[in-house]
Image 1: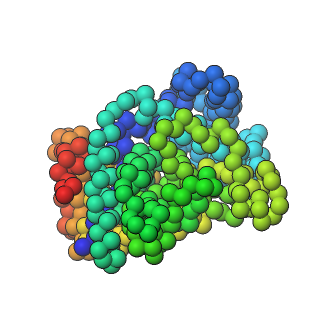
Image 2: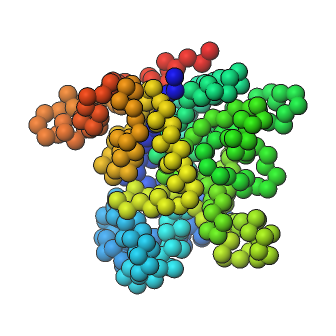
Image 3: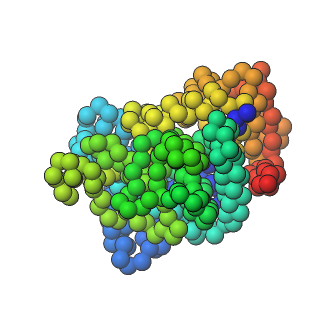
Length: 381
């Protein structure tokens, strides 16, 4: 019996992450939130961001803070995909600009989480539950009973799971206990960081893997544009890290004898909320393919804080295609998502209605008690 948890923005917002709508507002507040060492760099990036909004998209200053991310990234991604320019920006400049905007989003999400100081108790408890279920494979490797699929970029869950694993006693004859498994081909950003290993390697060594499949990328991922390796790092305390430093693919540097070359410079890996999502990246495709397998094997699917938005039509297609007809489906939402609270057309705009409509004829349970109440009920022993 396998359970697949699908996490959306509501899961992370409960622990202090910003809503998608609030990210640009957080970007404009960044310069005042970082020490002098990084402030001028951030001011320059924010200035580039403002210039693009005002000169390329003609957004008024009053509307800038709450402009939709979809409307910023869609023209950029379309132009890059077509190999064309957009306004005064040629393709190569758009690629650099996109990477800069991604860095601003990474910093804005991290800063909002730190500033809010919300309790991470739900993240901690859910992480302990994931590890407990994942460790069932130590007794029987075929007992693959749990995984997480998430559309979130933040790394609160990843870091917490990893930190809990690192505190475990390492069995005699082994050099690690378990791993966070992103279900793709990964390397450690720090060359001698032995905590980061592929999930299949862990299983082959008689250890366990906790699967977290991040469909839209992650704040702690960097990718080589040449060999497509995905570099990962976990953080106990993170102040921006690689965002301010240039990092290069050590494998390509060694193999091609080109040190600090732009062709080897690592880039962020974030899929933006547009209607033109580029899912052709080899690592992203591997994650999506593994997500399809997880869904097909699940006897129960639990959505937590995920609202089934229209913009996620690729993921909705995956759900339609891969979830078995007899699978139990549960959606953990909040009271404001309940269509019964509204009258007229307003009820059709709710997440509760979207779930009822999309999974019509399925074994569906809607729970409007929220993330904290659901996580509280998980059995840790």
